[in-house]
Image (tube, rainbow, N blue to C red; front, side, top):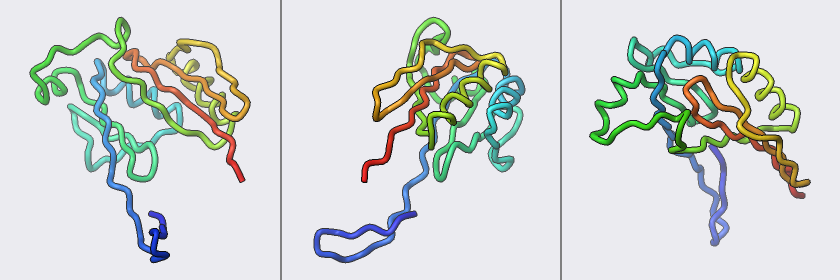
Length: 145
């Protein structure tokens, strides 16, 4: 929630709409355990034997859906994320150490790193692959005055 000012100088309250990213997973319990080790929490109201709702940030959620349940939302064939890439999920972090810390936790929990860290001076990034092969990019961008 933010207070914004329009071109006429009038202030208004802006509440971002929730964003849900849906990802297929092979083993829901294993995926939940993996992301718990990275410090993510889950909303029990949207969790059952087929899916869970991972809380990423204010109004940002990732629905982890068992593959068989995910298939009920599409007629298209699912791809193996370990063999091809359908999406890159990118999360903003508050510091370089948060980026590195999440990558270390992901690798310790069974994930892997698809590439080396990228340091562009004003922007630092790294990432990990989760247990199903989905790529999670992590970036820190320096604040400009």
